[in-house]
Image (cartoon, rainbow, N blue to C red):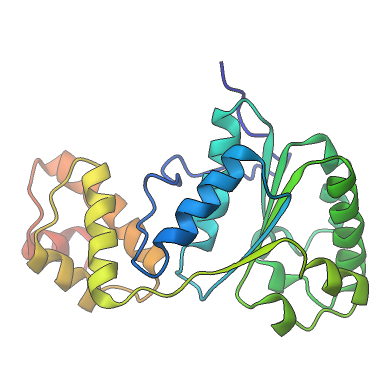
Length: 234
């Protein structure tokens, strides 16, 4: 039986639907995502760095890596620093006991001495223990204003992937995939209305699909523009 990914006492967990199979890979990102999934399954690359604009799917892919590790009976930990960066970096102690550590939102702690030093030492301990580390940020390693030179150097090790943003047609396809996973049909006119009326960030749009899923099940209604307006208070 596969063990659940390790979780912090703070309650940071993984979204059930954040898997590689549920990630919409555009033509520009397809080979990247395939390569990434293979690396985490084969343990061939100890350090991976992902960067891309908000909504590019960085958090989804980090959580997907943790799910893949769990499916392989390994222990994984997901650390979103946008939520946890205001805490001291004590959570990085002993993480080399895990098999995979996924650190999201690196930009939130860049320039903070305690965090940078803790990340540098955690990187070294994971490397020495033969474990995997994946870090995601909004910028490439050399674009970050990292104060600690040793950490700046470490961030350029391993493999770096750039996640390209989706255009509107690809965003529509991503929403359609998310709806299909939930057993819903998303007509093109409804999907385009959601893209036009909803928030720009893809993660927020996907949460709108979740809300529509619950509302349509409760009301036993198909997705139409009037129903979407009512369910989302638009």
